[in-house]
Length: 148
Image (tube, rainbow, N blue to C red; front, side):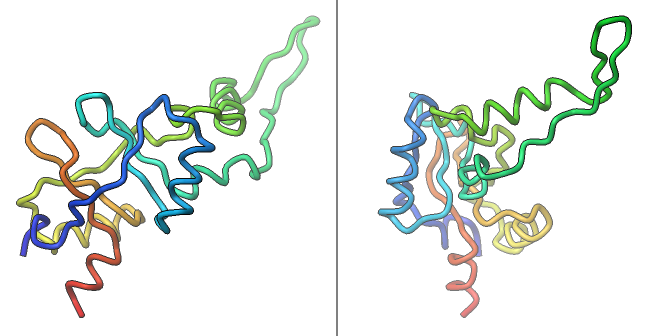
């Protein structure tokens, strides 16, 4: 059995410039917990899950620093702090999406997809064609329906 045999072909997706507020409404009204992000050509450029959207409720971790000669030396990455602040104050999808998207092709075996979902601890995987265009999505629910 292959991805094309069990994937959901009616995929809800969003664009990078969409508002986070609109994304949340789409997810809540559709009863879904994650959405692929596509560019104007339909190619997958990111993915957003509920975890990404509850980020503003996370405690902000301020990097440790030491004062030296009237200056401040950060002992941890200041870039990480910048990314955390940007994500916590996100207005656009591009600010909350995960850009490291794991995708599969239509001819990927279901067994391999199960291993990806479990090994990477993810709940969904977009299915793309040879040009990285979104053609479907497989969730853990699709796998359960296939098994039972």
